[in-house]
Image 1 (cartoon, rainbow, N blue to C red):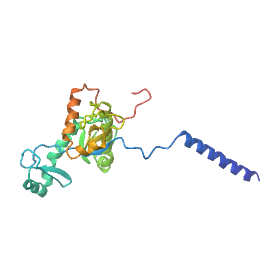
Image 2 (cartoon, one colour):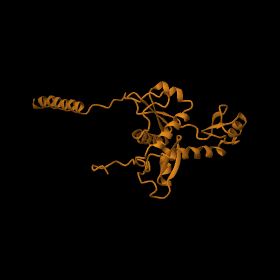
Image 3 (spheres, rainbow, N blue to C red):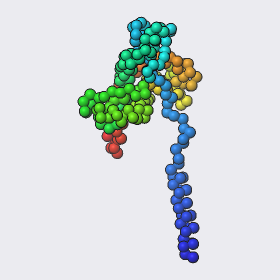
Image 4 (cartoon, rainbow, N blue to C red):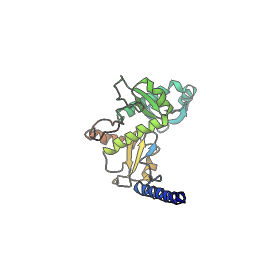
Length: 237
């Protein structure tokens, strides 16, 4: 008889604790909008990788061997498609250079070690994103987790640039940025827009919008270097 009484009481007590815990720690909103919209970085070259001619409105855009190219004409396109590996390094080097200028992390995304503490950082392009590692030993792990590592860098770039964004108006409409502004990461560069309609206007060619942001950033005094992905201690160090 005692066991029959105790079991329901214990179950009721456990249920009360569970309800209290649920009330104290509400579940995360899985329907919350993401912090930013992500789009590919603009093509980094202004000249054809084959002929050296300046790329204009008639340039051909295509993908070969996993790399996106732009060439001045279809003849050059055919040359690239026959041997994309011969031309890909030039595109990759330009992408690295463009992203290195505002790389957001001071530490290796794999080991957490300070970049430069073990010699010159190793640079990889993962999913179109520059990822810096402390040493060659981290390359295999980073490559195996390419999407996650790239996303870690992009998210850090967003946070760093969001904190010091140099404009208070939309680069497309000129409207003031408010709580409904849309944050867009073109590769690792943040562009803030007043609405999604403006995003649709610049998606095909975001270079002009990015140029406006970078020009404004160049005029703004620096507030510090790259961020570290190491957790801060209680003293804020």
